[in-house]
Structures are given as C-alpha cells and as structure tokens.
Length: 249
Image 1 (tube, one colour):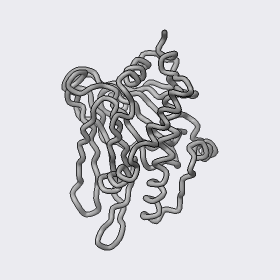
Image 2 (image 1 turned 90 degrees about the horizontal axis):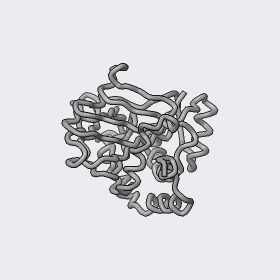
Image 3 (image 1 turned 45 degrees about the vertical axis):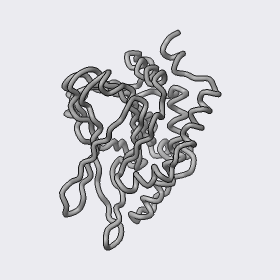
Image 4 (image 1 turned 90 degrees about the vertical axis):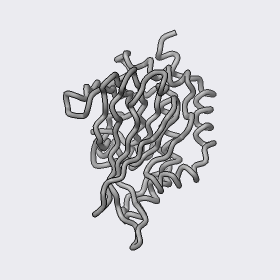
C-alpha cells in the first residue's frame, strides 16, 4: 500500500478525527490561549497517523512547492506546502479545528477593537480568502536534521490572516531527535519580550497566535506581537505538520 492510500482514511475515520477535536476541553484551551498565546492539544494524532503524514514528505505529487529555508534566510531545514485537494484527514482536522478556534479569534478581535469577524465554517472563510486572491493552500510538512532550526517568524500570506494556527509534532523527542523545541516570543509595548518554550510529544499539537493577540492590562486590553520558531536540532530528524487556516496569494 502506498503512502497516499494509507493517509486517506475512510469516512468513519475522518468522523472520528472530528469527534476527537470536539471532545477536548475547549474552554480550558481557550483560557491558555488567552493567558499565554498558545495551548497544547495533547495526542491530537496517534503514532500511526504521525508516521503516515511524515512518510508523505518525499512524495512530490502531494505538494505544490518545496522551500529550502537557508536560501531565503528563514533558518536551516526545509518544508513543503500541500496542494489541493488536501489529504482527507488533514482536511478534516483543518475544518474541525477552525470551528473551535474561530470563537477565540473573534473574541480577540473584539478586545483589540478590530471589526473583522470570522465565519463559523472554514469553507466560508476560505471563500473570503479566495475572493481576495488568496487561493493557494498553506498546510505544510516541515523536516529538520541536525543543526537545523526555524528562525522566529509569522505566517502571513496576504491581507487576510486567521490569527491562530496549529502545529502537530510528528516525531518523538528523545527517540527520533533531540533539541528542536517549539519557541514562541511575545513583544510587549514598552516591556522586554517574553519567550515561551512549549514541550510536545509525538502527536501533540500546539495552537498559537500567528501575529497579534490581546492582553488585559490595568487600563484595558492592549495588543502584543508574536513570532514563533524552532530551536536548533541537536540530533536525529524532526517532522512537523503545520495547519494554517488562511490561504496564500
């Protein structure tokens, strides 16, 4: 059986993925996003699903582009953007996670005085992206080897950007690689920046702010700027699945 056949699950399996997303305590996850700008979604994928996604990486037919980070000053390592149609499980996760994150995104915009509101359904949001000329899919697979890292950055691909994204660790720390921690930095007005290092195991996901988020201060809400990256890999190989909810120009 080839990698594509393995990664395209049956309808019951995709329904199971949607149910798994719904079963998380989204009030608690939303509280973490509000407090820290990130939240860990434990065991979003099982080990077999992680291995299936990682096994897709060498198969170019699944992807629209291949980026070598060092060529662009992004760090060291590489990644590939998926092409449409996305693998069924990835499509289902993207749809289900968006529905749970959209209320948090809308709350953030309200607190920051931003008039933009996100529709309940992901397909409706993608329609807005496509109408704005952002039609290229953004979910991606990343691959790191010894010495590789991802410089601090923001995944903005056009005028429209959903303010939260998700990264799923497909490899097991301590077995498949060492180093390579997920890092989030928050630049606060007139204050020193704050760093958050997020420990993840295979199959865990982290939802995090793409660009800005609100923070409650003594005089009301203020806006902070965030960037994310991956620290230097000490050994082994690390694969990550990135789920971005806006499409690119």
